[in-house]
Length: 451
Image (cartoon, rainbow, N blue to C red; front, side, top):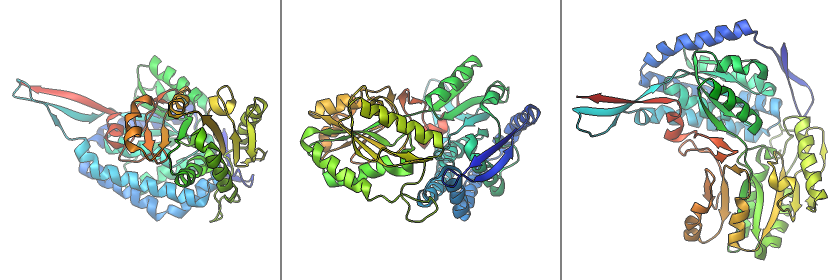
């Protein structure tokens, strides 16, 4: 079988890759299993050096990789370059910090010596999405490989070109054969990978449906899984907020990557005293965004990654309007392009409130007061992140316990950072990536006791 990636802006074929047969897949799995012993025996210093080299390869080929992202999933070129730079950063971060993270943890007991050491667990199977085709992979791979594990990547089928280039990054950096491998397969072959003896754990970033399916298979085979799933992040604007700063951040938080981000601000919950002012300024700011060819340097809004995704967003908009939401801006789509859209008077029960809108659609929700704003933010099956804009920092900190989400950002958009743990709860998944937490996910914390 052949897999073809199509440029969502031009409709042209980007590349075609022959899928792996079951026999080829088993060869890849066996290679990953055999490689683990040699790879984990290489010194941490050397593994860290190689990861730093991977970052240098990314920087050297920055424009090449960015243009491939543009071609395969439609991200504007400036954002695509920023994505590659962030990947280089995460490589450097783990190269510099792995020794501290993996150091023995001395624990005083009645023993002559007792401590926890940190060993790799083996081959990790990664299932990754198309919306940040390099970043999602590198935020997993940098800590996982540096810790001494090997990895097999099953990327989204519309970005198999990115998957091929990512494998090339590690090869060019000098990683031994079998340490990082990409596989070109369909969803129906996933279980044969998870069930293989070499695979010890699974990391998935994707939809709830994909996460539920993979977690079920992993559970059946008694293998650990880490899930980074969807989100419907609330962006709370309190009456005392700096509205101009809030609007500036809000537009970026919603419209970056044409809204195709799990951590994007999706539900804007605004105290009624400043609702009209915020919404009016937000709409005016969105109107100023330039849509166009993702390869143009001044493009801010590109296309969605596939036509069916734009159609899905359009359906959510139509359903919300039918239930009483007001169309304040946009609302149409053509092919894979969906206009930046703003809906007013959104309420629970509408698709734009209840569901994850994975596109450039902002839902404006009016709250009577602070208490109702926080209550509305938590009226969701998701729990990835919440943002609150206010001048009263102490009050915002005191309200952190109200939020069940994995992230709570005050006067800033929710974003991933190599130095901070990242992950959610509920239908947003479980486990943590990035920081020391991300490295510990696929580590055997081994207790050592000497009498």
